[in-house]
Amino acid sequence: MASWEEHARNFLLEEEEDDEELFFVLLPAVMPFLDEGKIPEHTSSLPGAKKVKEILEGHENWCKQEFRMEADIFRSVANFLRAENLLRDTRGMIEEQLGLFMYMLSHNASTDSLKKVFQHSGETVHRKINEFFDIIPLLIQKFIKLPNPSGTHVKITCDSRFMPFFLVRSYLHYTFLIPFLTTIQIFTSFSYLQNCIGAIDGTHVPITISQDKASPYRNRKGTLSQNVMFACDFYLKFTFILAGWEGSAPDAGVLRSALGKGFTVPDGKFYLVDGGYANTPSFLAPYRGVKYNLSEFRRRGRYANYKELFNHRHAILWNHIERAFGVLKKWFPILKVGTHYPIECQVKIAAAAAVFHNIIRGYNGSEDWLDYLPDNINPADYVDLPDGDTNYPSETESNDGNDLRDQIAH
Image 1: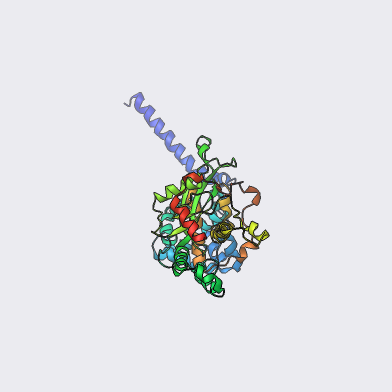
Image 2: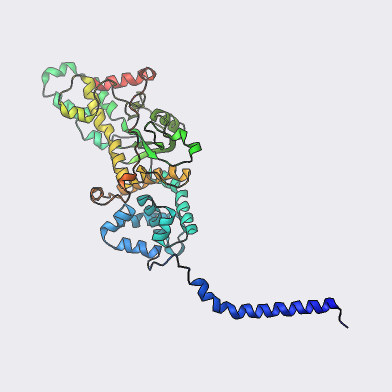
């Protein structure tokens, strides 16, 4: 005879079997009502890869606006990434990943925006963006290189304002000057100017960071930024970049840091810098207290002395770095606004923009369309930023640098 415990156990087992049968009967009837309020998130008929393909094959302005480059340049970059195995080419998706990154860079697009445009989950977008950020250092090594120390830049050799060789021919028309010009003087100044290999300056890029870490990034305008040092050649291509320094850091301090992180100046060569840097044999600054801005020289065509003449010639060449900044930030106005990516990614955004600037220029990409296509980012969101340092204590300057400047100016 079964005990009461066995009767109770059998009763519970029968109840569980009945509940399971009821569950499988009711589930199909209930499911439609459970799904009724759930709206699919990815409903576009154009998922990411097809969207990129449509942009590349569409009107020529589409790729310029969405990815800030011509379609043929976009394809060349994708083929380079594929050939170098820098990204995983699963099912030929490098074009989509490049498009996703360039869209982020061109629109200051958040993860939510990228999810909507490319029809991917947040996890997929996050992974693809980070994979691209990871290869930025490799792209810098490939596309941002220090200039070749041998030879003289064509912008100098082909302009009589900068290459004294052409001035010699003019002098020879005035025989009364010949006794005052020796062969040594002529070829000495020739050797000085041919040693100019580029221009250097810092530019501020907005940054977003938690309040407890914000203080060092607050610049003299009161906004938050990083001070990014660039060197460029006279083709407006960047030859060095150092990003990540706080907005309160002076340009000269960032340069000192760069010299400790791989930035070198070949013996006998020099860069042009503005008044925010010390004048040295490697970094030639203008005369202080003497007019320098190009607008000042337009108002008066005569030079009061040799220092003004030197400053004018210096300003014309050094202005290449300002023009390079103008083109860079026109191509990528994300450099004018704050983003909400992690701080290490914000540093790489400035570097990535410089890389693609050089790539586009290397492929002879046009700049004309920048003036009539929208910037993709509302100018009302642009952050007020300082222009750069203008003063450096003269007592800390190099006597050798001052002697070199005087010799060239005379």
